[in-house]
Length: 170
Image 1 (spheres, rainbow, N blue to C red):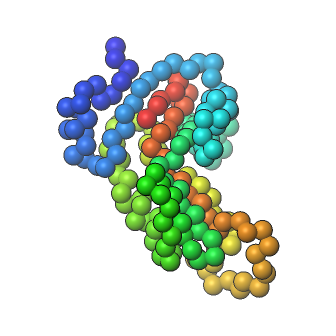
Image 2 (image 1 turned 30 degrees about the vertical axis):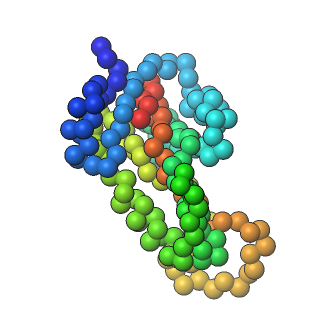
């Protein structure tokens, strides 16, 4: 049994007609690997990485654990300026963060496989408390003393998805 999908370049090209991101999946057994142990192994490889658990409702164990490293694009917002960092360099724009995120998200349209987790590519990051002003008219009476970004979103194409029965790499 081959644990790699798609198995050929021709299969990959056929799938590529259905989206802009084709997951390349390799299934491996990881019975003794916990999500935290897996994260500790990859976080040293990339200054930007994440561990995201998919616990829903009253569940005690996550259905999926997603890990990512080496983002393709990092988008930062601070003081109404948005910076986009990628392999081709840094770009600054006056466009609102949400507009930039909508544009970038529209470029990442994954091909869906029926047996894959729901998250195979996309953005992970945070929105600060002050980013609530993007959605609501809230007074801004306190100065920014920390210089922290209002938001950082990172677009990843290198992901690991751990499931109850092992690890899936996309």
